[in-house]
Image 1: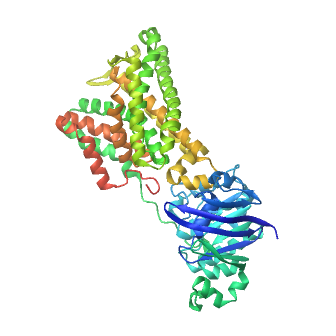
Image 2: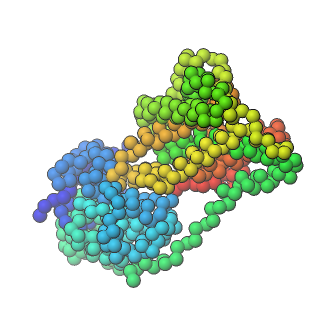
Image 3: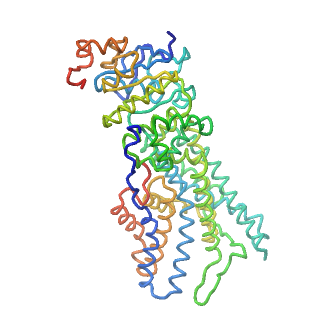
Length: 240
Length: 336
């Protein structure tokens, strides 16, 4: 299995806090890798460090064997990495169209690509010229993801896309993530919702206290409740 | 239908026309207080011209502050430098200034304005690279560094031009007034108003119709995300800083003609006004600065006529009232 992204002994300091404390994991090409863990485990920091938004103080990060640690976020993005942050970070004063136009860095918006996006996010077509700040939470999330995929990407980093969304919208987002995955894009997805992780994940990496404490197939973790309880503090009730 | 298509109706956007109408409101309130229509029109026309010059100087500052999060207390130095560069252009072109030809007079104003903008844009590049770049994200150091940079520029002006005021001759075609009945409109004020309107139109066109403008608007809201989309934000920063400095220089040149003289401290004088305008307008909002500049100029002129003692604090009072009404300014941008 070819590997798209590799982290080896990555440390990240934010101010005086030592958040990532030697993170090692890989993200197989063409698969969806779930990055799970309790709050504060370092998942978002890991994504931001890969993206170049925070500098790794030590260690190696490689995209298709090419070292990318130390690169600015713009350079990482130009290597084909799309990013949808936890905060969504849509440009609320710009229209839906303008947000997507910025996502298409290399050139004008591709009509075929847009139609593909509108297929699973019809609201974006409907509110094309509306101000992004006036969209609902779910619509903002789809805009954030659409912006990340409006151009073909090699690797997608998505941080907690279902956070705070209604169950019906979560279901649609799962369908969307599957659609994106079907195009062969490699996805690294941080998610707190274990049901979502089970539905879209192929492989899983679990973090705790700034380190990877488990790596394996998502299906194996999904079927092992004892392991879930130990790694994630999950009970059966939280699966519902 | 996808679940994501729910929420068919978007919340209606609150009408944002009211802030734009505040200058009109001030005019309506002031008209009966001023009484004489001719005086009112003269005061209002003068305020519009002053407002356009303040806007030209402040719009660059709002972009620099809004997008780069840089507190540029050196902005005033570019205003002063622009005014002095204008005098350099005028010196060898005295014949054009004195000529009884609108074309030559316009050409000399255009050359002075262009030279001021270019010189300040170029200095802006050096200022950003040497003084501002090392202190990105550190507000206290930005204040100290940009004040220091400003002092250096002003002292260089003193060294090069001397401490005395330098008179600036207004080109012949723009001397005097257009008189209609009892109403007198100074010709240069009309020109300044037109230049200010052209600057505003140009900025809005660039911001709303070009990808660079789109990037600037996005950068004002969230620089980090712009970078994460693959755009080199540092290059954009340099460009915006240069444009902001060039606009300050242009405003300084316009002000030099308006005042008929230049002096090095004029930049500091207008810097405070620029900060008041961008705070009232909403940090990072060019449209907000436009409305705020007109508002501030109108209030200052009416207050100067009706209650001269109040005129000294009218701008501060206007800022307090606006911020009590809209704490993030007339047209807040993103999360600012």
